[in-house]
Image (tube, rainbow, N blue to C red; front, side, top):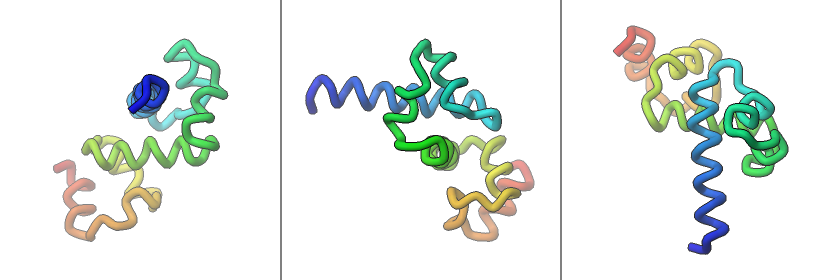
Amino acid sequence: MTAASVHGERTRQAILRTGLDLWPNVSARGIGKALGMSHPVCLYHFGSAAALRDAIAAEAVRTGRGDIIRQLIVTGHPAVADMDAATRQGWLAGV
């Protein structure tokens, strides 16, 4: 890995972590402000505001953020589309 790619991945991970902390009020501007960077930098790493929000949703599922996962289930977000009914029910029950 090059130094640039390592830096890019660290930035991407920081954006995702901050997005989780700001959920559900996620915006490239809000994340950029929290990280001391411009919002275009946030968008650069994900391509669009929708892709940024989807990546944060996927990160919530990957890391088991129940508070966010419950919202994703209720809204029918694609990040939980592959989740079986029993697992969804468990998350909704607060497991």
